[in-house]
Image (cartoon, rainbow, N blue to C red):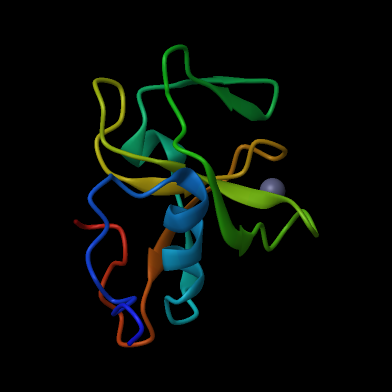
Length: 107
Ligand SMILES: [Zn+2]
């Protein structure tokens, strides 16, 4: 008899498994937000510069402005007021929402 594969693994999920979990999510609606509303940053020459903002990996979603550039997940931290998605190329920030308008990043 085969073992039940739905058994909870004894170890924490690996990064690859974590990525698989996000690909199961429904498509998200990206809403551009003012970076200064969510990040403590300085505007310099058309881009926003923030000193100590950590990103937490790449999302499946790509930047609507920069084709093929995947957005990075930024979680709340000392210089970040709210979780959001960030494009490293154009420095735009996006909120990700489900089709019903609720934020996908408020967890
Ligand atoms: Zn971009």
